[in-house]
Length: 417
Image 1 (cartoon, rainbow, N blue to C red):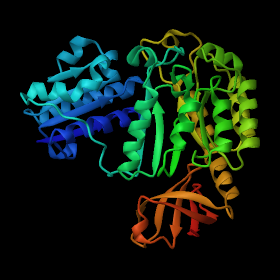
Image 2 (tube, rainbow, N blue to C red):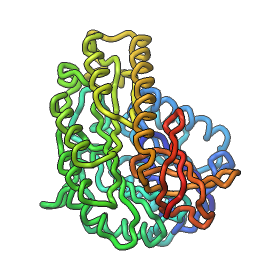
Image 3 (cartoon, rainbow, N blue to C red):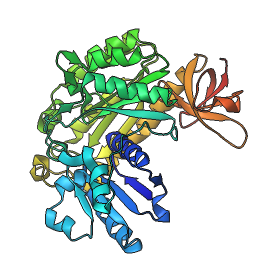
Image 4 (cartoon, helix red, strand yellow):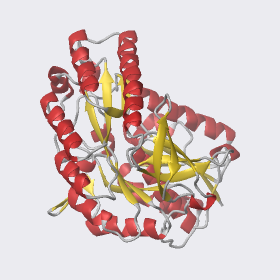
């Protein structure tokens, strides 16, 4: 039998889809592109914004129309966010809530009348890096975010279960593991925290390198920086969803930190981890964001060498407190401010890339172009094109020396090891 997937949204959703695929593979299914049609179609939804939710619902209708006989399965945040009567009217065969997500494959098999038990296997080496889900859920309840309602309370996977899955990834040939979750800063198994887990993962024999997903400011980010400074296998890249550079807006967002705290963290990262890549999420045009407040955010971005800036104009998410806030910023102005920060982010990315010229970097080789140039990502999370790499080194880590940075911040390098 065949199965197809469409995954919306975050890295965590992609990690969960990989787990679903492993389960279907163990049951004898073959994955095919969703465009070709499949016996089972799994739509892994996102509801972080209204537009993301709408896109998912549109695809459900399209798939049902094109593949009337397929077993159509919906999982993910839209299951919790969309009214049940709306979902029931879409022609879905299975709607899997978050409490049954881990049983998705058995539920589908039962629906198809397939008996037997199947043990999930490690995913095939069809991608270059593996995503390790270490926790789910969040209880921070930021005023603009629906996630605590769609994913529920924080839950951490057992420490040993995380290590065992990571070992399976290494045994399957993965050189890079990405640690992901809904809010990984909340990870805790007894007295063991995220930093303890990172130390154990980094010590796994055969692992090339370890990469972190985003870490909430005001939590364990300074402990992470300390671990990063002393752990060569931990990629030198720190992504912080700072959202705003104005304390009044951060308070209105119900964030758990101040601008001054962010600045101290960024300074510490730059002092302790040379050439660290810094990423950030920023929202522009949040209700109440004056021009002065926006300038505070722009000044914060300007002050630090961010290499990876994700900027989003604020979008009302029904069901969150912020959707009812007064002092709304007109949508064109939200987009104008976002465009300004995006331009600044591109400039800073190029400047950061130029700073790596002449300094050896490690790259995971993902593919080769027609001219034989290898392409991949550095530990600092910059795209890199490398000459002199044998074709046998695909999916391997290589050390190279950048000699130039292109306009968009892509490095050009020669392999040296």
